[in-house]
Length: 304
Image (cartoon, rainbow, N blue to C red; front, side, top):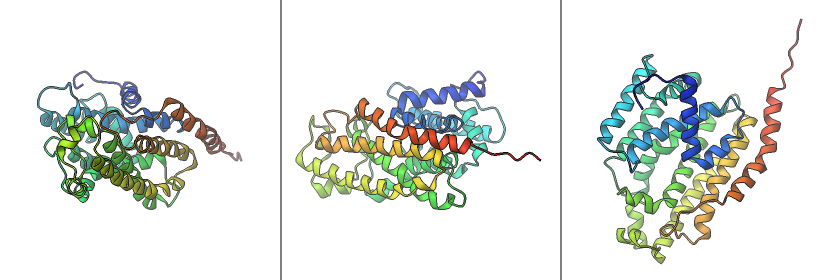
């Protein structure tokens, strides 16, 4: 994805398709945003997914580290005004510039992606949090300017945005234990495996042992705490962004609900929120999204 120049319109459309294909829950939630915000959210998601595909794709061949470093180099060039060199970069760079997104967050994300190429285990939850700071928390803080905190609330909204990123990431880790293991990675802290008497071999079984279920319940409680700490941030956003984040909160929380409902049996099948529930969550927030969007568009201009 590096040769012929790509128009800005095409770049945004490619990012939208990345989101629609790989992030169904979040993509559904983005449909509740005002139309002008959606392409920017897709651009951020598209860049993150593109980097993640370099690291995680089962079909990619070649030197992944060199490919990831090449993406970073082309990004640095594009941010400095040079040619993008990747189809996702025109949209991503324009969004970064338009909203003043912190370049340090981008660097932290790319460092986390680089770590996935060499780090396959995390000794403690603090160690895992260090990784998730780059892989998830900064995604929340990069999205924040697009979602528009209320005037004077940007600093206060930053921590809940981080917490929501952590909650989503930990939910995915619990859902994807088997898939991550197939890539050679374990995102359950080794100290927690020891605490509950779980061996790595237990993660390769066709079904969960009682000890593994207890461990997963413990980690699910941690995820719930991240969700709790994120909740206050929703009301710190401009009203037209709140339905989207409430829906995303419910959709990802729904994955955790499914994991709990199946008694943490994540090795045998992947927890999925039923389509009917996804649509119900979307519909529940659609009226509020429409009303908020209309209210923000209702501007009175005094003509002298």
